[in-house]
Image (cartoon, rainbow over all chains, first blue to last red; front, top):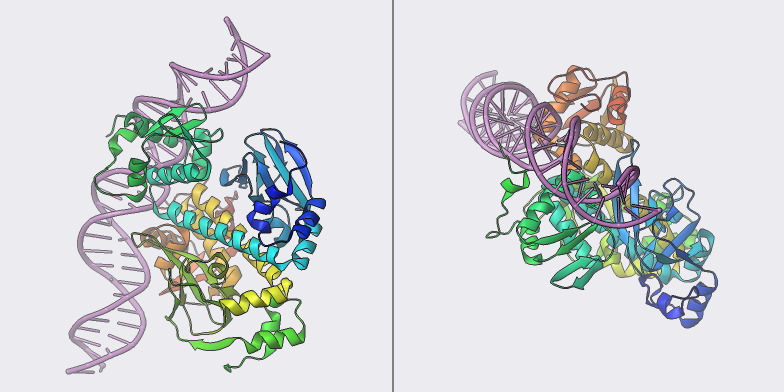
Length: 247
Length: 247
DNA sequence: CGTAGTCTTGAATGACCTCAAACGCTGTGG
DNA sequence: CCACAGCGTTTGAGGTCATTCAAGACTACG
């Protein structure tokens, strides 16, 4: 993966749809491309937001930390998606950390450049509006789910969403394209790693998933969907989730 | 309140900051102003998003409904704020219902008009980006809170936020400017009206709030903040509602 | 082979929900 | 004016899902 990516990569990004070839060259000229090793912190919550990013390759997780250290995974970023853009327009610091969960290639622009670009090409602003709007709708849906639904169902949903977003077909199922610990799943679904572990173990026994270290493979997406949607006929054996000794 | 509002009202809106007087007249010309009675449904979840709105006067609540009827109050809209804008740019229908919780005056534009306006005046798109960005940050913070925090603290936070956003000073405290039922608070905080009722009753006994039918008055915001932030020194003493910080 | 990090599993507690009933405002009509 | 219905609210009792505390097992890596 070269450090000067060809413009076609940029051209495909949702953010730059509708730009002419000339403008794309302009965009490229003002951008900075960089390799980022797995585990690198790209920016930190509270840092002044001076740069906005897009991902060429790899995966980045966006993590928000509360006053007492509780963490929540807000979003996983994949190739072609922007991140860190939000804070550039709201002023103030980044609202979360960004961390590379695999080796990545990122491209970035200064806040000033991006603002200027949007003034020159309103379509970029409108594209961004579109992306941010979708993300807002997603977060709102997730908010409702977390408020009103049981943990098991939230975990099912989270896995299905991850598969949708970062699924890689493997022998006998679909795996998730990057290291994903139980703790990660807990921070997505708003629960503890213990509950996640118990739930996944129960599912493994039923042949729905296959587990590994920082790895989950979905073997039976239909049953998982049934759990997520609470469909009849695939009633989960809830008792088995609770360590075997119900009371 | 006249049905042809003077342009200064529009000029003050965050969405139209930076527009010239001429442009503002243009905006006004394409807008439609309307009175809305308390309780009116302005748009419904799933309706095709053909109009975007701003509020001149009154309060509107944005409510999302899940597949099985569970509801969640996403946002309260006050004077000068826009709503229903989101869906216009993401395509698809509105992601939630909008309902007037008081008598309102709204102003609206067709989606096409608004898009055109943004192309002519990028600053409007960038302003909208700013507003939407802030809202996204708010929702993400709320998501983390709901995931990681106990109910009592979430209720405290919700009340403080409502006071901030719609507080009206009254004799011996601050009231909230519109009818707010226990059920409403439950739908904001992701709990049940029973738990809300119990919690508020306990607080009333401690003199923190004063309760009425669809009404909450904050008498002691400091203690409420202490509960919200889990500060020392204001430890709640009631048996029925959990206090302190864990174990 | 030891160390550190991830994951599993058990047992006990408890926060919150669910179910159920009754209370008290508010507005309405006799 | 009072009776009555409707709605929001309060309160109790019981159940359970999920957290919390506590070990221990497994995996990767030097």
